[in-house]
Figure 1 (spheres, rainbow, N blue to C red):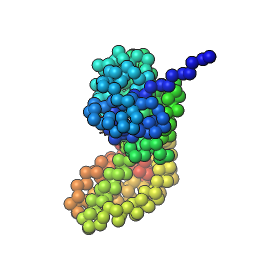
Figure 2: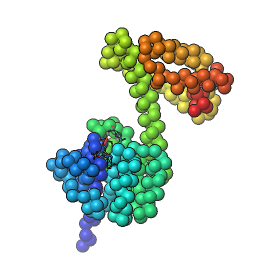
Figure 3: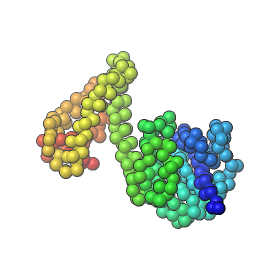
Figure 4: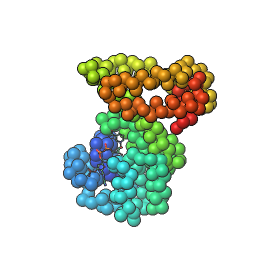
Length: 290
Ligand code: FVH
């Protein structure tokens, strides 16, 4: 008779808002889980939910097959793993900490030197979304590690493998966050303008959402123009007109004594684009000035 395969022992390191959400999700799916956090008290909730919290990081690493990290940044990841490098032999390291593509590649190289597999991840969700249909997580690095861990990774949200380059997940993650911060920064600036007239952000919200939804399809044309470097094809709103209109965004902020700091980089890019002769092109042409 053949022995049943031992279940992989997963350790979640980092029990902030996100690490806790990840660990609770795995516990709900019946995974045997070890947890560790620098501030030990944060493991209490998970211990009560059925996780094992060993007294030290060394004991946790020693007992784990899969080491899943979710810390504040990659400096913290490296700083906790480095002193225990000898315990990382033949493990699977899954790092869901936000970082740069370069950091992910460096960590991948370092983990491989310890004879372990490295998978980097970018979580596209906030903690309450983990385990819901709206969450997705981007992974890159060791494909065999991804395939082997997919059965539990899929519980966090849709799991998408972005390629063998460990930096890819971070590249897409940062690109999506850049898109998000542009939108949120714009909304916060708008709310500051409206507040001058005692208009609540919540009252403005329906209009803002309708406008964002109406404008989202225009990304299709922008993307096509960028990929072809033909910034004039299909243009309906030329850059000279947009630059003139944009001046009113900055002027309105100043008129209302609102710092135009969030608007100024785009104003500068529009001016640079005009200097380069892109008067008849679309907004996509500003990419040439980045
Ligand atoms: N929360 C979110 O909305 C986003 C969603 C997308 C993904 N991010 C990234 O997830 C990582 C963790 O974020 P978080 O929300 O869990 O953050 P915190 O609640 O602030 O917890 C931070 C944990 O990191 C530990 N930590 C910090 N410094 C160190 C260190 N030098 N050594 C060891 N651990 C460290 C901290 O421990 P403690 O302060 O409780 O002792 C927490 O466990 C992050 O990359 C997001 O960008 C979240």
